Length: 115
Image 1 (cartoon, rainbow, N blue to C red):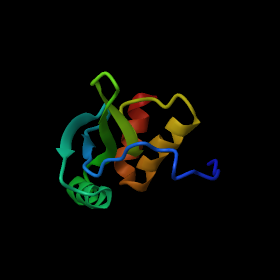
Image 2 (image 1 turned 120 degrees about the horizontal axis):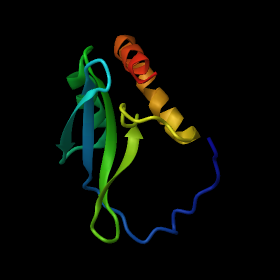
Image 3 (image 1 turned 45 degrees about the vertical axis):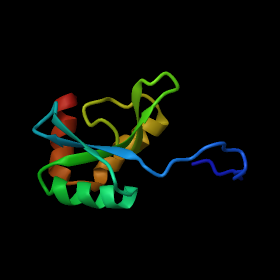
Image 4 (image 1 turned 30 degrees about the horizontal axis):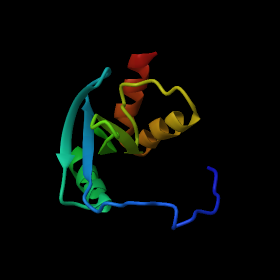
């Protein structure tokens, strides 16, 4: 983690309304994926919903759904990353490792399936 001072004056816009895309992964790997878009919520509410909805049988990750300057949809990963992907760099590995705080049986089965 790199920490440096920030300047609260260098932004020109902000928005309060966000769309969080929550992904649930189930199966033995490659995982079956189910996605839900959450609106009219805060990040902490979305996280609590994802944790409760995942239960003990599914992994989850959360992304901010955003548009680029050309209107194309994209994801900004906030918790975890696509459980079916292979991490390519150190940040992706750390996001992938966030899945470790979820049920161990799913993580181990998914890793064995990708090896």
